[in-house]
Length: 49
Image (cartoon, rainbow, N blue to C red):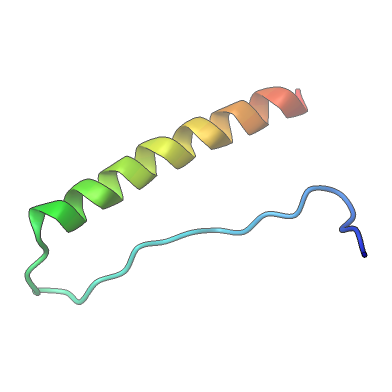
């Protein structure tokens, strides 16, 4: 077993081809992900203060 030092993190992104059709479901999923990770990041920043 091993342990990572500190609290590692990574950036996330959503990509799609320019000028290509994007379904409403895909747009909604991206919006939900944005909201979720915005809340997670706010909580993380508060915990670090």
